Amino acid sequence: MFQRTILRQAQAARSILSTSSPSIASLALRRTTQQRLPALRAFAPQTTRFYSTEKEAETAEAESEDSDAKKLEAKDREIIELKDKYLRAVAESRNQIERNKRDMDGARKFAIQGFAKDLLDSIDNFDRALLAVPKEQLSAPKTEDNKALHELVEGLNMTQSILLNTLQKHGLERFDPAELVEGKPQKFDANLHEATFMAPSPNHEDGDVMHVQSKGFRLNGRVLRAAKVGVVKNA
Image (tube, rainbow, N blue to C red):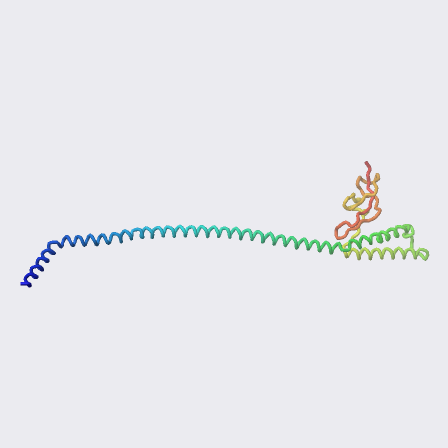
């Protein structure tokens, strides 16, 4: 009796389950869908965030490239400035070397300038001594009476010539404004001559040198002492 009752209840439960299975299945499907929707909703922002991260990475990369380009441009300008400063320094150094070389050459060439000036009076004294002897006595034949005078004059000329040749080896040269140039008297040159007087002369043109008081000297091309001359002025 008890077994029959249990069997009947079991059959009744099966019939109930068979009739209500669609509703239960739909309920289970709804529950599964509702459980999946939050997951899908949670996944959607993650996709959006991934796209935004790529954009930010591209922007950061572009900014980095722009910054690198600016740094490279600044380095190029710095290199150009340093190169310009280097070239200027090299040019200035070369100019300084050339100036020092010219100064050394000038100091070497004109080192004897003071010494040469002190000798000019002695050289002039040779000229004065030779001019003190009358030309008539020098042009006269050498005899026992004038032999000493001739030998003295010859000795003075030889001494003067040796002295001038020695000084010429060191750059000191004498110039005589009385020497003719192409058969004509020299013209007055303020760079070479010092006019001590001016006088008319019918045989000369204005500006001609007609008298020489003292000869001039050059030291390596530089006028050490101007020649003292008399200049013609007819007007």
